[in-house]
Structures are given as structure tokens and as C-alpha cells.
Figure 1 (spheres, one colour):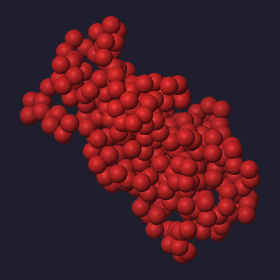
Figure 2 (cartoon, helix red, strand yellow):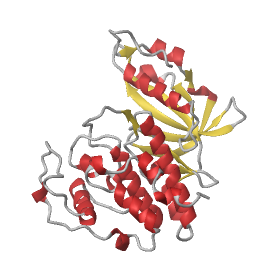
Figure 3 (cartoon, helix red, strand yellow):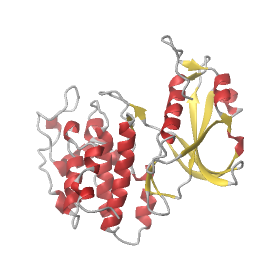
Figure 4 (tube, one colour):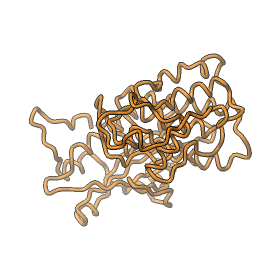
Length: 324
């Protein structure tokens, strides 16, 4: 796949013949049942008929076709996923195969792609719901480290996940956490303003809700919300709309000053009451002091003042005692 880029006048499309040559058909997999559906595709539990009946997860993604073929940007995304797989990072769900869906291509002018991933039985959302009681401090710390390790790996490869939430964090039988669902992942430029249809509302950072440009710091905010949820087993900021989510955030961290407010956004600070920051220790009682400090520094309004994922991994919460 690494040879899919063009010359200085690179084409923007690839023909269906090109795709068929690059990708196998999905016939080597037997679909068993639907695991879940989302805005970016349907995920099936399936059996690999050519590999001893191994159980896999197949994500079905439809790509709009034009008369000229499919966008090369789609193929580059696939190439990127395959490049990541070569590292076999322990906190990134494994991409085992990429296939095309065969006959449906001509029928509806959409290319059907199947991304075949390792199958992990549960996500963090269901794991937290099934847990019989509060998670131990060691388990929370280990899971937090796993999530941040996966995020740091993506960021080091210039990828922003943009949809971090408990549903997209998979928990293995041994309790390790793996990042999944890169349907929204995009290689990033230093500043970008993309569609606001990113990140489930409760984990969405303020810069996205305000319509400002953003970068890797969006993932750190989302992760801070998830780390808080590991301690309480309930969402930290559960708004009902974009506007309500901002109110919930400012009730928690305080309304930012005019100096901190981003430029070129249509919403002004005076749209919100003069909320004062809550003491996070009241919101997250009985939390380890280092965990509290870490989450506080991840949930900072100004993205440039948030810790990076690497900063988080080097925080005393993880370094002062050995991870068990």
C-alpha cells in the first residue's frame, strides 16, 4: 500500500481495478452477528475461514464513488492504518486485513470496504457497567496508562483520534486497554478546523464545541474525562446539547477569561454566567492526589496549556510507584 502516492501531479482518484488489485475480497470471512453500528459504519463479529476459524471484528465502511473511481485520500487512510499495524503497539487494536466488498460496488456506486480487526470481547463502557464495585487504584492506574500510551503512539505518528470515549476503548480478558475505531482519525496539520461532528458530546473539548481550530490536545481532554470516569463509573460532564455541554464544562472548570477565549469564534464569554471553578476533589472524592493533579492538568481550557499525552505518561501518578 505504500506505493499509492503519485507524482507532483498526483491523481485524486483510483480506479476500481486498482482497488481490486490491492485488496482481497471479503469472502474469506463469515459474518456471524452485528456487534454495533455507528455514524461511520457497522461492525460485525466474523470468522476467518482461512485461518483456523479465528474470530475477528469486521468494520464495514462505505466510500462514495465518482465516475473516476475512489478518492486516493481513502486509500491513504488505509495505508496509514497498515503502517501503524507494523508497530504492533500493545494499546492499539490490531488491524489484520483490509478487504473490498465485491459486487455491491457497481450496484450502488459505493465501494464497500471491510477493515478486519482483532476481536476484543468488551469495551470500557460495558466493562464499567459490569464491574461489581469500584475499581482498585492499581487497576485504574494501569488502564489510564494504557489509554495514554495508545494516544501518545498515535500523536507521535501525527494522528489525532478525535473520538475517544469508553465505547472506543476495548478491554481484553486480562484487563489491558486498546484504542479502537479510527473512523475519525486524521493526519493533522498544526492548526485545523474540521467538522464539529467529532467526539461524542460528553467527551468533546471546549475548543471543538466553540468551533475553534484544534490539534492533538482534543484527545487529551477526552482522555481526562475518561480517566475521571474510571474513578466514578459515571460521565464527568454529561450535557444534553453543545450549548449545555459548555455550561457543564464551565460549571466544572470555571468560565474562562476574555484573554483565554479563542479568536474568531461566534460565541462570546458573556453568553455564559460567571461560573467559578469547582474543587475537583469534591467531584472525584477518595481519588489518589496524583491522579487528581493529572486530571486537573488534562482538563485545562486553553489547549496549549494542557499536558500532552507524553507529559501525562511522565506525571508522578505513573512514575512515583511502579505500575503493577
